[in-house]
Figure (cartoon, helix red, strand yellow):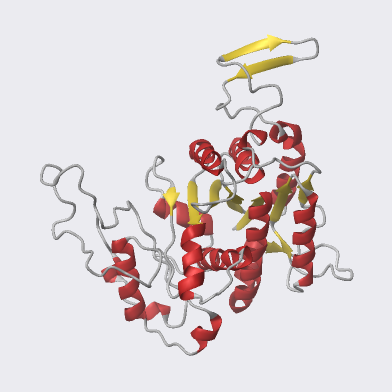
Length: 389
C-alpha cells in the first residue's frame, strides 16, 4: 500500500528530501516493495524523466527553498519530485502560527458570532479557533488538488505522512490546517504527523506558542504524532556520530535514517514470512492503543558514523539487551544508559504506597513496537523485549 508524504514549510521540505534520499538508497535491497510504497514510475520517459517520482506534495510560502529542494532531488540521479507536485507563494508566514490557521481581519473579537459586511459575511471568532486562516483557506483548493492528484496515482492508499517543524509559521500553522483538510477529505485514511521539536534555546521567540498551538489542534485530527527533538538529535550527532560542526543537514540525516528504519519493508508480528504491506497502518494500530494517547517517540540502535560502522560487529542478543534497557530507562541514546533503572518486580507500585510527588524513573509507555532489520533477523530472540506496564 502506498503512502503520500506532505512536506510543509522549510523544515518539512529539507527533512522530506533527506527521507526520500534514505529510502532510495536503502530500497536497493528490496526495490519493488520500497519503490511501490513511496515512488511511482513516470508516464513520460524523456531525458531526465525516467527517474522514479516521489509520492510527495511540497508546500511552502516561499519559493526559494522549494526550488533548491527540487534541484537537489534531481541531481541525486536516483529519484526526483513531480513537475507539478509543489505549491509556493512569494510571501512567508513570518514565524507566525496565526498566519497558518487564521484569516486577515479575524484576530479581534471573541465568541462565534457572524458580522455582515458589504462584501461578505465575516465570522469573528476566538483567535484559538482553527477554522479559518490566512494562507489556509486562501490556498486550500490548490493544495488539496495537488494531494488529490498524488492519491489518484496510488492503487491502494495507506495514508499520509506529514512532515513539519513546530517552531515556525508555515510548517506549524499551515501544517495544522492542511492536516485538518486531509482528515475531512480522507476520513478513512491514516494520518501520521512527523514533528520536529525546536531547540530549547531556539532563535524563534514565539516557538513555544507555535508548538503548543500545533499540538493542541493536531490532537483532534491526526492519528499519531511522531516527535523528534532537535536537542536529542544534536547529542546523537555530537556524541555518537562524532560530528564536530553540526548542521541542520546532519540532523535531518539522522532523523531520516530513523524514519527509514520504520517505513521500509519489515517483518511484522503477524507474519514472519512476508513483508508488511501497510507501513502506517501497522505502526498506528500497534502504538496508538487509545485515541487520547497519540504522542510517539523512537529509539534506534546502533547509531554511529558510517566509518565506525565498517569496523564494528554486532549480535542480536547484545543489541536487544541494550535496546531493552534504553526502553526501561526511557533514553534515546545508547551512550550513557542508566543500568540502575529497573522495573518493579510486581509491575507499577500501588498508588497508596509512594508519595504523589515521587518521580517514576522508568518508562511508563502504553505500547511498544519492535522493528528489526538486518541479517538473520528471524533468529533474533525477542521474548525479553516483551515488557508489561
